[in-house]
Image (tube, helix red, strand yellow):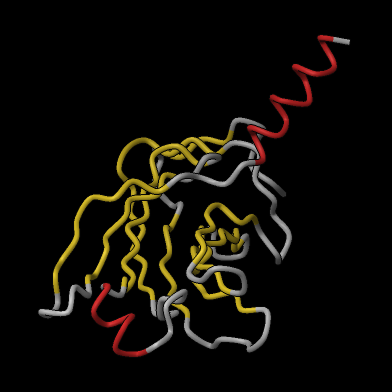
Length: 160
C-alpha cells in the first residue's frame, strides 16, 4: 500500500508543471504597476530556460480601474539553451506539454507556457498564452530552441 502511494506521489510530482523564479521586476509608473520577469526551467528538458515577462497591476491602478482581481493577459517569452540539452519523457504530439501555469485572476484567467516538439524541423517550440474561461484570448508569444547541435541527447531515444 505504501509503495503504491509513493508511486502515485512520484507520478504526480513528475506531472506538475515547472515553477517560475522571479528574476526581476521593473516599475513602470507611480501607480505601482510592474513588469515581472520570471525564469522557467522545463521539467523534462534539461539545459533550456525560458524567461517570461508579464504585467502586474499595482494597488492604485486596481483601485482606480475598479477591476481588483485581474491582471492583463499580455506576456512575452524567450527561451534559450543554458547548458547541455537532455530531453526526457516529452509528449511529441501536436498538443505538446504544458510546462507552466500561473493565475492572472481570481477564477477565470491564467497565463500558461506549452512546449511542442516540431519533429520535421527538429525544434522545441515554447508558446506563452492566456487562458480565459469567458473570453478567448489571442495574446500569445513564441520562442524556439533548434536541436541541431551535438549537445542534445534524448533519455528515451529520439522519436522517429
